[in-house]
Image (cartoon, rainbow, N blue to C red; front, side, top):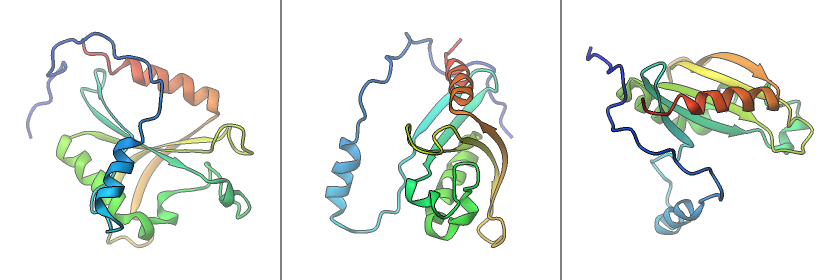
Length: 164
């Protein structure tokens, strides 16, 4: 196993700009190009270097839609194992990428601001993904947060992306 460098492999850049607008143009462009064909790729939400853990972090945000609330599914109760067959390609690809990069994979269940369960955020560290395990293909370690609590932790995590 190769040694993981103790510092970033890149020169120290200036801080990045704050997030301002959502860029959905690339998604729309790829959708147009595929013209209805199924995709064999995934779009994922975030990758960052963690200067504390000396590895990359891959973070995928999983929206718990309001339509699910009536079925008793909330950010705290939803889990990729509930819908693995529907999104197997996504979770398997994320896991393969995680392994290739010697990274950590995190999944974050959340609801839109202003909805009934907006204050529930489930932060999951993915321990393994095994498509041959029909009972529990995605093994996770979980922590529940309020939205404010998660925001605080997430900002701290984000700051760990600064190259030293």
